[in-house]
Length: 265
Length: 263
Image 1 (cartoon, chains in turn green, yellow):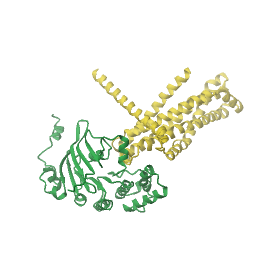
Image 2 (cartoon, chains in turn purple, orange):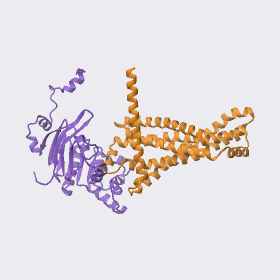
Image 3 (cartoon, rainbow over the protein chains, first blue to last red):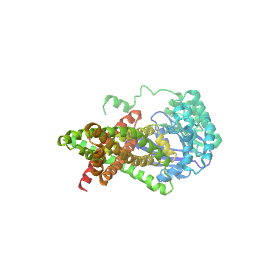
């Protein structure tokens, strides 16, 4: 552990959809410049956690301190301002379908800066080169492959030179070769720009390669935090199961599931 | 009985929630349309112009076609009654007044709702499903500023513009039927038309079509933001968007007709 101030500090975060508690007192901190992986199975609440971190939804209680400021307590306007320091790559890339790839990358620059069009052009090209999409600027998102779309999404997230970047399932739905390429890109971005990266994923292969610190989420709670090697030694049953890629124990049928089958409360 | 009351109560609550959501959307749109540009937060003029072309100019062929035919139909139907009294020259009055006060604004609004209201819902709904709306927010772009405000301005200007042209074409349709089928003289038809119309007729048509534009845009946008869960949701709410629009257009039409009846 180094002793620098954490860049993101999450304390006792609780989030619920109605009565359904999705995140239950989640706490962790992220050091500047590291790749922090949020690992968890489907329905573990990891995407909800990410949406809380970028401020798309507000938690029921708890705090998210980013760069020394409490992100949860800010007004909507201050949050918009704070978000310029963050980039986010969505699971499906979420490029605007009506704009070309280059226009997508240039969009934050056009809307938030007063730069000359020629400067924006150059910056856009630099970002696209960075993610290996040099010649694809004039294509529409629908003309790109899945991997290229994700790369374009990363270029757009990088447009404003943020300090923090969030990746939602970067390798989901990609073949192993393309996924490995993306893992490499996430590493390169982090080492070149000293970029704090938060990656939400369930792919153990990429976790092994990219993660500095891993936070395992299980049913909305933190099951463990540590490096890959530390967690591999953990005796938390869920973490062991996850790392060993074992199926859910067939004998221990989930109580709620049993109830839903039988209809008996 | 209790169940019926319960349903009625839940239905009422849902409608109130919807009304609140639409009001928030209205206020937001107005702020981004009028206040924000003055404070130097910008307005996407280019997008507004592009949407004006899409909603207005590209609607002209179909609106023109339908309104011409409706003009022909009213003239022929009017002749059926008026002809019995030898009053065929009054076809011109009937066509002109109903075109300006009622039919041109209504037909234009219904067609634009079907063509563009649905497109707005589909566009925003698809963007929501693809997380594009979230992407805008994370980039610090307000979806209302980026998507809604330009569409709103384009809609409330294009619908009245198209309506004026629709009025003229409807009168042209009435003239065609009167002159070539019924046998009214062109000179008589034109004189009757000019005498029949007063400024108020045009004003009523314009006021109505402005509010039709407001309805089409807000219903389209609201339904778009309501989309949940994939392509199926987009389809369902696109249909709902057109149905709601046309329903509200008729209600607004009725309100203004009653209002102007007493004014």
